[in-house]
Length: 555
Image 1 (cartoon, rainbow, N blue to C red):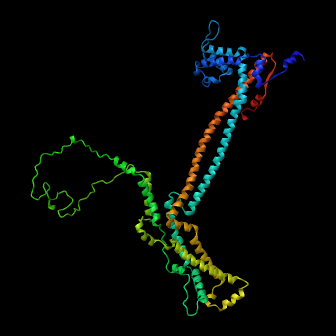
Image 2: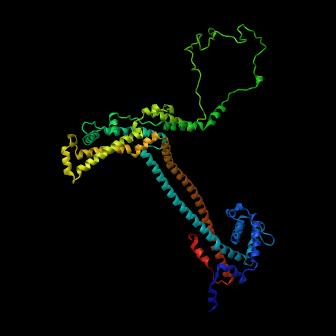
Image 3: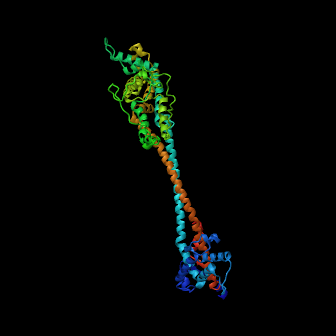
């Protein structure tokens, strides 16, 4: 192998042992760390004297992060920005001279190579992996926040849908739940009660009662005995239909009114502040008051009242509003007095309470105290009472069971011949009902039972009857609404957290890129410098540094 071939053989150096390799090959002195510390101290001292306003790069420097590369850039900037001034020995003076001395200290015995090896190991083994982990951590947290945001939005939409569905089911707009519930119950129940009474008064129910009564009279009544009345409650509601009025009970109505009163009494400081804010323009400086009181001799006028004199009504003042007989002058009026008092402390809650009371008045709800309960109850429909409805249902279930049994007997093939024989000897009133007519009766009875036992109907009745149920229903609806609001507030927190993570991610990218770029530049500097020290032989710094630099920021 000739000399040219040897000169072209590359020198591969593991970056992790570059510092030891340089010391072993005596390319840098053994005490290079001590000398480097002296250079760093000189940099810290000269950094304070830098004219940072001359170049933006100088304003971004950190004295702890200045290495040989940054010192070289600073020196080049100072050469361009400051006039050249050299001493008699031909060296630069001033700040430029100090940084020229720093470069010479770096380059003496190749101290900068030891620093470069130290920085590359630090960046490859610690700084760059840490920055990459930070970026991955921020990206994972952002992905988690996106997942949470999607889930919260989905739950908020579900909560809003449930709240809207509950309001639509009850016929509410969701603005003022208490007032709307009362208004819905007050308007919906009369139409429901009207449908119930209309079905109970129909021909199908009449024929069902007649059929059942005739059957009981024929099958269960002895000759000469008075038939036992059947379905008394059903007959009573047909003969004496109850009222259709659906008004809230006293306790429910008081719950609405006391809501306003509680708000008023919960703010007693408002009235005190109103009084304290009045300027009465009264001073108690007695020195400014001239009472014009002198020594007065009191004479007794003979009626035993001392200085007090009895004035006859006929001696009344001419400007008085009363005549001598004690009657009031009709021409006298207090219209000259302005009673228009404006409260500057009136709040939005006061207007809301006023609106609530006016709304109650407009919807026909007059607030009656508990002592007026009999008057309210007398106007309420009997269908609002649970016992009254249950009695009607008992009769309906009784006649329904009877009709189902008759229909089963008429349609049973096995006993059909026997039924014809029994049917032929039965009274005419029982023979006129066929299976189709019985089916029609059952259909109407089922409709009435459905109206009386419908969940919405029972809820509306309970709204007007029970304050506890009314409050619980309002609280349930408000919880659904508040759950949506709470979830949306959580979205605001997620947005703030996302902005914080994005800012952190934005600041981490430049740090990682700067560390990789500086490591690549130091590697190139070391390879070119060592190549010149070994007569131009190519030098390659190998190891993990190559993988890190090739992967770049994408790793």
